[in-house]
Every structure is written in structure tokens, then in C-alpha cells.
Length: 318
Length: 318
Image (cartoon, rainbow over all chains, first blue to last red; front, side, top):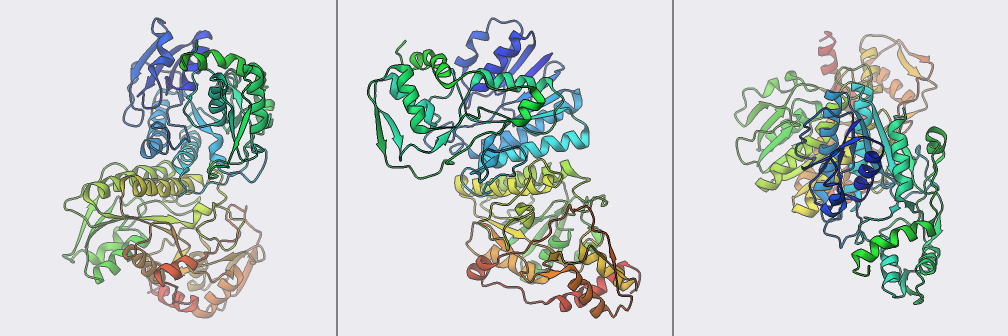
């Protein structure tokens, strides 16, 4: 297949490109480098099955050839208020990537008869009052809350995708992506895992906020990409959660990271931050298991081991 | 003020134009007549303070003069699957009016320094599990459900409006409009009140589905418009519910309609339809009362009396 990936220079987009190229597909990659980085696709420069166009998917998409599939992964995604490329600092661009970007992609998919896969997110569940979250859960998102620029953009993108499927018969897929980690992740995205891993590699005590009992589920990127590609090849049009359902407390994460990295500096506890982050989020992956025969295979310690070289390189420790 | 109203040929847009013209403002009206009707603004043709441009707000807005305020009311809004102008049959246009239309309006408001008022809806609460619904309720909307094309478009529009307010300092208002009735309403919009009133005026028995215990709250259009204009003149940026909190069973509605119209044909009961409609929805208008000193004044029987002439004319009974 010839596959267009928007946001190809992002964390997930670049891994998707690698895996799909390895499967023998040709990739047309697009990115405007607002949140993605040329570093993430530099290794593909010599690959004749990979071409790259610097474009903003919200404005215009140039497609030089007929594409068999479109994977729409372009969007700011970091919830870190301090990150310049996080959605708090790019609210309008984030909403445009979800609405106009998805609309542009669906327009091409309709005209060209391409399959379309939307990168949606566990954020559409907001601060959930149901655990774990099945795809049928409607979520708890305040449309005028500060995180809504991302959450509602993705909810809108899902609705628009289903509208094109139902009304224009476009062959669509929707993946709801839960927390993911691995090489090429944004080390400044403000999430617990990169913060802790950085501290551990620098030999610092790991900062745990509150008592560390708040939980997270993290999926290693290879598992996630495997699930997304299985969904792409499937016939399923309704949303499918892809994520790791193993829920751990932040304290357990911190201990695992110190164990794997051999960090002796221990843990320091700090006052809980203003609770902008959901206290818990965990995927119900029953549908992924039934429909795609998919489940994650890489456990946390193995995933951390595979992620360390990237972090060391970025930190100048390699 | 010079005020731009999108969807001016719709039920609410045309009443807003009437009230704002009566207040001394100049109105620039836009509509593409996909759901609005030229009949609704025909009486304004000779008014030199009213100008009209046939435009699709999702594509492009032409603004001939500086506008002091923009009221974005353009959208399909009927939930009737049989209605050609309902959102089930115009899913993409509905999503575009919410996303691209709102984006176009906010762009003008930002450049011109205009106030912007978004017509949002009680539909953003979905099928609520909290009664009555305060503005803080996050709602229960399935982003891939069939009604999502309308619900998510309006949720997105709210988020985008707040993003322009917070990030670009645009002077915004958001009104969440609950069920409204009155002259110029869409008689085919599939809601209970127009269906029952039509039957009563034709001397037919009123059809009540199920046991008639499902409830509704209906606001007379003059009350609603009064609330919206008070919000426009206020300084409130967060969403405000405007609607009538008097909740009645469908059976009570039917009995009131038979009473006011003098219809002797009684009521017939039919099997409950497939329950696509929410069973209950009722506004909590505490904020409207506190912030705007607003509450509805027209009771149901008076509202029905004021609506009858329009229905008689449309039915050829006048």
C-alpha cells in the first residue's frame, strides 16, 4: 500500500512509518514540525520508499500520488502547561488539527477511496468515573475546561470520521490511544514516566507528588504500533482502545525505574500538584483482544530498558 | 451596534433580528437557506437597518462593514430523522457549521474586535444522568453515536470559543439553548410540541407515545430571545443555560394543547418509539437568574395561544 501519515515526525507517527516500511509499504510522510522533530525521521532520509512533505494538515494537503490509506496522527498532544509545543500553548492549532485536519484527510480519503485511520485518545474519556474505560463509556469532559481544546478536538474528529463512514461510505478506523512511552517520546511532555526516567538517569532522587498512590497505565510503543497496524488491517469501524491495562501506582513506577536504571538516589515526596491530571485512567482492551487478537507483550521493566538508550542520548550521557 | 447574525432566516435567528432591530441596532443577516426560510425574514425586506447576504458560513464570510457583535446561529438543529434539513440528513454540513463556521466567525471577531456570541445547546448534555442540568455538568454524549454530529459540533464550538477568549482575548458569550417553541418554528422538526399542536388544530386526536410520562421543558421564543440579548449585553464568558425549567409530562402538554385549542378529539396512545430521544432534559437556570436577572415569563398556555396563528397560517387554516 501507499500510506500517508500526517504527523510523521512525531513520536507515534515516526514509529508507525518504521513498522509500515518494514512491512513493505511505501510511506508519504507529512509534518509541519510544530511538535514533531526532523530528528525522528532523519534515519529515513535514504529510504526510497519514504517521501516527506512539510505541510500543515489544517491548511492544505498536497498528495502527489493516489494513497491507499491515510493515518491522521498530526496534533499537539502534550498536556504539559510549560511545554511550548503542548496543547495549552497551542490551543487553536490543536483544535484545527482535530477539525480542519481531519476534514482535509477525510476529503482525500473520500475522493481517492482510501482507508482512513484516526488517532484518537483516551483523553476523550476526560476525568473518568468508570474504571477501566470501555469504548462505550461516554466520558467526563467539560467542553469549556482548559484541557477541552485537545479532548473536544479529538471527540469532534471521531464524530466527523463516523459521519464520513456512515454518510459517504469512507472506510474508516478509530484508535483510542492510551499513555505510551518509548524512544522518541517527548521528554518534556510533562508526564510521569519521562520525568522520572530523566531523574533516574541523572542519578537524582525521583520526585513523587502526593503519596504516589495515583495510578497510571503505560504502553510500550512497539506494542501500541502493533495494535494500530492490526486495526488498520481489520474491518472494524467503531473505536478500539489500544493501551496497556496493567495499572500501577506512580510509586511502583518510580521503584521500577530506580531498579532498572540502578539509581541509588531513592525517592522524594512533594506536595500534590494542582490536580489537573486525571487520578486514574486504564483501558478496557476487551474489544482489541476480541477483534484484533491483540494484547501488549512488553512489560514495564523491559520497556524501560529499551527506552534508556534514547534518553541517555538526549541527555548527553551516551 | 452593527450586529452580524448567521442563520438569520432560522427560527431563532429571525426573532433575534426582530428584537435587536427594535432595540435600535443595525443587522447584517446571513443564511444559506439550507434550513432557514426566506419567509422568516420577508417582513424585514423594507427595513433599511437590515441587510441580507446569502452565504454559507462554513465556507466564507463576507462582512461589508465593521461589526460590533457576531451572533453565530447557523446550524441544522432538527433531530427528526425524517426531516431533510435535520442534522441526521446533513451530518457533514452540521459539523462544518459548528467547527468551520465558528472558526470563521471567531476569526472576524478577533480581527475586528467584535463581541462573539455562540448559540450552543442543551444537546451538549446528551442523555443526561443529572437533573436538572447545571452548566458545570459535563454531559453524557457518545462521540460516535448518531446524534454526535450535532452534539459534538456544538461542544467543539464551545471549546473553540473559550480558546479564542482565553488565548486571543476575544470578547465571547456562550448560550446553551433548551427546547424552544413559537411562531416560525420548524413544524416538521419532529419534536412533541409542533406535532401535537398540528394535530389539535386539525381536530385530530393527539398522539402520545408510551404512557406519556416522559417529560419536556419548553421555553417560549420571546423569553429565550430576551435571555440571549441579556447575555449579549452582559460580561459573562462562561456558558449560561437559557430555557424554561417548568417540566411537564408529554401527557400534560397534550392536555394543555387540547384545552387551549378547544380540540375535542382527545388523545390516542401509541407504542413508545425507539428511544432515541432523551427521556428528560431540564435547565438549571440559577446562573441565568443570578448573572442576567433573567427568568421566563410566558407560561405554556399563553405561549401556545401566541403560536397558534402561525401554525394556522402554515396549515392553510387562517
